[in-house]
Amino acid sequence: MNTENDWVYKTQPQEGACRGYKNKRCAWPRGKTLGGSSSINAMFYVRGNKLDYDEWAASGNNGWSYEEVLPYFKKSEKLSQYTEEHSKFHGTNGYLSVENEETIDDLENMVIKGAVELGMKNSTDINGVDQMGIIKSYTTTRNGVRCSTARAFLSPLRDRKNLHVIKNAHATKLVFKTGTNQIIGVLLKQNGKEIFVRAMKEVVVSSGAINSPQLLMLSGIGPQKHLEKLGIEVKADLPVGENLQDHLFVPIFYTAPGDSKLASLPNIAGVFAQYMFKHEGPLAGISPHRVISFWNTTDSQASSPDIQNHYLIFPAGINNMINLFEKHDFSDEIQQKFELMNKDQFTMIVYNVLLKPKSRGKIILKSKNPMDKPLIYANYFDNLDDMKTVIRGIRQFSLKLGETKALKEARFKLDWLEIDACKKHERDGDDFLECIARELTFSLYHPVGTVKMGAPNDKSAVVDPELRVKTVEGLRVVDASIMPSIVRGNTNAPSIMIGEKGADMIIKHWLRHTEL
Image 1 (tube, rainbow, N blue to C red):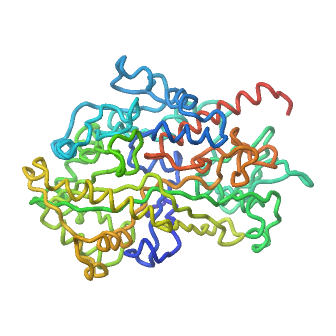
Image 2 (tube, rainbow, N blue to C red):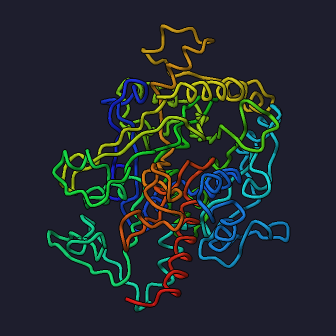
């Protein structure tokens, strides 16, 4: 975050969320490098729920049911610890390395035991027949190294004569053939120079849920009123930028006695050397943070979740090395209070992730200048049902975790950041939890939906089920922005699946149509 490899996006201020940040703007990091956000993400391999894709298909997206997309998940995947039990749901011949190591860290084991005490199922594969339960997640890693989409898919093909990668270039506009709605190429800027790249067949935009709608709108594809207001010629009046969805989360804190020497510079340096020379040690995996859980707050027998939990566990004094709240640009008050909490204590942050938000946001252009960042309206908690689900998740599980034998034996206790804005509320009331949620709103970095896929008669859709932009010739969008509704889980693996399926559709189309 906040480096040259991050677009450093922030949401527009809103009264109902992100209130603990400077300027009330949540942080939305996005990967600005080869591999995009897969090069800066947390490397969890999660596909979502079967119901996600069946819902897409039921809304008119033919070809996108779970049984129809499963082959593309398997096609990408190269699972490390593969057995016959994995054969129906997993693959071993893909470019994307997925590791499912059996070793487990003591702190991870503590979390799993605590959740099981509370009645949660100890799962073996949340990407298989049943997503529900708690598990040590599969990860997109290869022998202790991040397996981004660049490393997985581009590196093996770098010598292909029909592949050309232009780095450090910014796509600024899609170019139409004069007097038509046919895309013939794209304009790029690199080192101050403008480059025109001509497309012989079609252009495929895969810039993500923020940059894809921005590029389309800059090119005249988007809501007519918005584009006309900015003086952009409208080529296709489509709801680009609408339908924005994201996974927000609200943290609950646990602390235990700890030694701040664990986060000292000599210790970190030793661990770093161990990784650099041998690809071993704590930096060769994402332990002790691999555990995730999925469950439903309204139906314990449900086959689809409405809450996901991540568990981030820090040694005492981690702020000496990295300040999580500073990275997100929280207020000085919150930064200082977390630093005090973590100074001499282990700190575990339980993420309460809202999986199926009812609230919808949007992305619009700030100006006609392609270098200006678009305006992101997250609209978190606009629908109060979202707040109710988060509070149920906190009450039913996160607050009870400290009552388990597993956490008591490890001496972890529930702790709170003493946020001034929430002191007026009693801690046992929903008003207090709502205040915490509105002050400590986080994004899990999963924006989707802004170039929505839908049936030909769906007026809220921008692309059809073949991912072709409606009323425009020679243009597809193939990335997370096409999701009609957000999946119940992390979005990296589903985005890769969309890439696999999109590529397959393009190949099949051009095998039928050989004309240039």
